Image 1: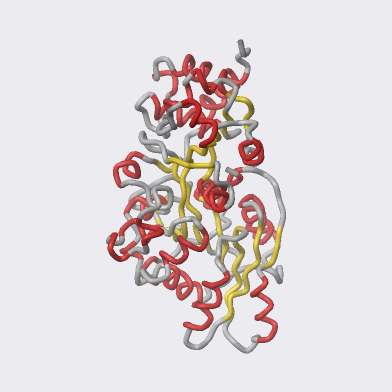
Image 2: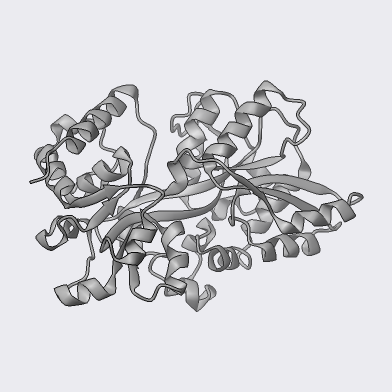
Length: 369
């Protein structure tokens, strides 16, 4: 759940060192989230490009830093290290548009644009205020996506005789003081709304009966709230259940055999990483080549497997055309009914934001009994 936190840090992909030896080749400068671009794909793109091209990929540990870079480049457009393409979480798209940090994109440049599922195409079509608008411009291209999931310790739940499958399980008495939740009002209030049969994007919370009561009960269950330090306590057994990002949790399953993960049956929150073009830069033809490459049906499943975060392309592919490791992974590719019940966290008006903030503060002030 680090996706919306405010920590900073950078690292550079080892393969970018190839650029120094290939200065005569066309190059594409990319700023991405750490580990978001598998090294194998960098190499394949360079080999498949005609003429051969070079990706110069600089990585950041937090999406916040990538957003800050866009702001810096707007203030100083002549900066030498400016990238041609930047990764941005959908959470930041509204602000990036409002602050004029990015420019619209022509989807006709991308041959596989029609293969992107409609809900992703809808998500990036916005007006100049960053609000969803069916007549708006396209501001970004979807790269990969994941969800908010429930991770739990199988050894602890074996003794309980049941395993969590849905949000309602977080309220069970056996889990009192045993779970961690994201330090994020939209996520926590949202999952409570899903438990009550409502949408994550419900704006008028005052019309939701029993919401405050449910939030107070949930608070009694929580050992701590954290969006970036919740995994180690789960590994150590200090907590038995944690709500977090699939991108954080899936890689742990390789080594942590006592952990399991489930996408809640009622549906969950979705997030997606996007490619945006800085408004302060100049269009580069290789941008379209890179995005088209990522959306190839032969590449998208490999991206999903290598990064353990799904490409939107795999959602629309026939099951028989997907590797078994993707097709049978209920987190990388959730059941279609669960996915249909899941939602992106859409931008809110100020009044709704204030309501969520108020409910969040009241929830956290409840005295645990």
